[in-house]
Length: 399
Image (cartoon, rainbow, N blue to C red):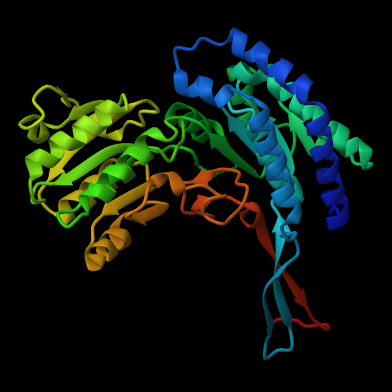
């Protein structure tokens, strides 16, 4: 693969910033075609599809942030001189070709490509049909930026395939494919994992839990739950499940207040059989599989637990492994929770909505990985490289 020097890559990003700003009208017009053709039955998907001036500003900001970050390619990880005299250097290297499969969000067409490109990877973009017109114009902007800097448009390619064609491509790609990142719901992720022949980095599924310990500050608890649930229901870092310790003081009164606050925010509350004893007008959860669902809606499930260990066990069994939080004033309890919960991000007295590259100091992100290899959490620029060993000898032979 061609290695592009840092200045040329940054020049492409400068061009892209200017092009996006100048072509706002074209972008908004294309997005309107997608919105007009979309049924609003799925409000979360519709929200992700919308592009407005603020979204375009966000795209430009993401490109600018990546441009200003250090080039992650060919950075030394370690260097050793062995007793034999061999010099062994471990350095970062591009993956090669990364395929992103995503639903709705046209801004991924910018944010995914800018990260992959700055890390010297080719990128294949397979967006959903609902964002077709938006993605076409955004990829055309990329091609214009590449042309202006004497680079081939093949660095960023939009794949236009139906489900059957995508399945065949995953099984038998007609070009080098080194990594696939599916961004979307459980069905999309399972589809990719079932058919892909190369490495798949799973991202995007939420189903996040929050545990209210008996020593929680109740004012903080209410504020955090409302923010985590209602700030952005379409986010994979939104809250879906709350577990309340039955030993919390004034347990029944606090459940009733929690329900009142959530209902005031138009959140539908469903409950387990124990909580139903207190919140008797709420729908009861009869199917345990509900605890595994990512709602992506103004809906929340509340359950009761007896102990910290019960909360940990339930979260590790049912959550998506994305983000989990504990509300407590006991730092030792928080430490145990955070060490034993198997999630990409764990929180003490904070909203799960912070699981985001920009909010966590990573900058623009490709996705939130819930895999453990090769990285878990926000996939930023530094995470879009692999490594390579450079070994220098002087006629060395192994004996």
